[in-house]
Image (cartoon, rainbow, N blue to C red):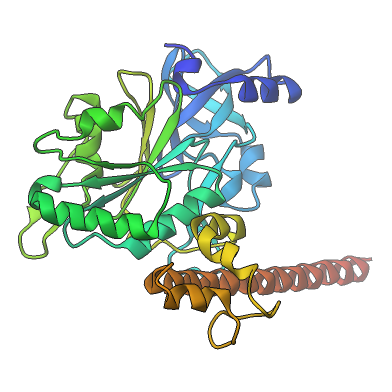
Length: 355
């Protein structure tokens, strides 16, 4: 086992030198459990905590270690280590925090590819696929779409489903697999490269844990059967975990996400809905809303059947959500700034009264 087997590369090696961390050991966070971490390097796996200074200086969740991070370590020659610092992340995968609008939930870091997993049964939703694509593109992560449980439908219905995807989503690798029959597993393995990190994204019960077991040829991940009453797999994964494949690829399992909240994702939206953005350049009016204006290139393309109406409607929905998130963040920062000024003023008065 080497650091390179865990995804260490020239980018992180340079960061280590630039931040004068050569005297520290380096490891990768492979699991997190309520503020305690498991870190792995060439010497093995260690339980870890962060330094008090790192905890004190943290301003948000982004300042704490997450699965996928490369960290410098203080090793006391035991099975327990202290995380001294976090190396700058090559990528951060995040979403809008559930029920906390204006706040981010960090999913994982230093990911090269996102495996967007949907099953052919009631979980299948193209709108949600486009949301996951937007998350990946925003984080500069290459997406791969994986359709699971293909043994549940016949060949014609599978073809119809894939045709629906191809109408809306272009130029993204698409693989169909069955964890029961193992159909498509070898094809997917060919897209998983040594030293690259892949994060599994999808709702609960789409077969992510079963997919990992199929890819690593062992029953490492706990799985559950499909509930006949709701035609959906049961939620199994409760925490994120980094797993090494036999071929050297690195998988990060991820708890199911029923909600895929969009954040500040202008670049991601532009890539996911590239055809719409290209069409807007041909609209008659610069401030066209692409709804009622005459001379709108987007509406003309919809009328001609060049783009799918539902594709455009999903774009509008995600765009509105993005704008609402951004305005909420601005308001939250203003309130935090005002609160900070109030505390500063209070401390100043308190200090003057003391003397």
